[in-house]
Amino acid sequence: MHCTDAGRRRILTASAAAALGAALPRVALAADEPLMTRPIPRSGERLPVVGIGTAIIFDFENDPARYAERRDVVRTLVAGGGKLIDTAAAYGHAEERVGDLVAELGVRDELFIVSPRSRGGHGVDAGIARAPQDRPRRSHAGMERR
Image (cartoon, rainbow, N blue to C red; front, top):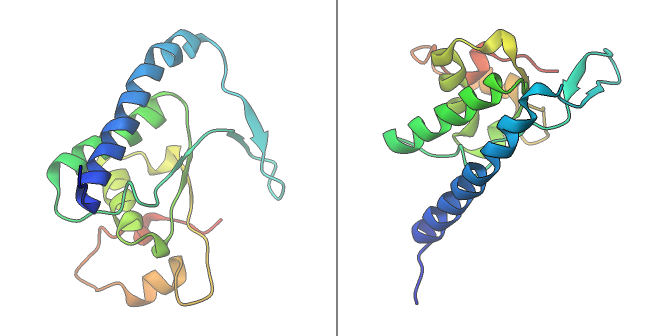
């Protein structure tokens, strides 16, 4: 069997979706229990110990089906009490997709979004500097560096 990169991605995405689907009933059963949290060292703010990362899975362009699936992921995260989303300019289009989804859902104030600075011209500051003026929904317009 010969598998292309696109085919592998579809298989991995479907596998991840199946695993999430299998886990959701257990999550629903645990809904009455508070989420386990840990304090952020600098601020003491408590965050759930589980969040989502956006490398690879949120790195796509012009794909309404993927966009809808990722919207459901962010919506489910927030509905379940999750807060942490880890993204970065180095993750291709992921940072922009996160920003679009968060803005569309109106959940920015409910999230703790991490977009680290890195050497090599990536990160929120570099993204703001290179963001075209005609793209007001870019993710870094609504994100803070923490």
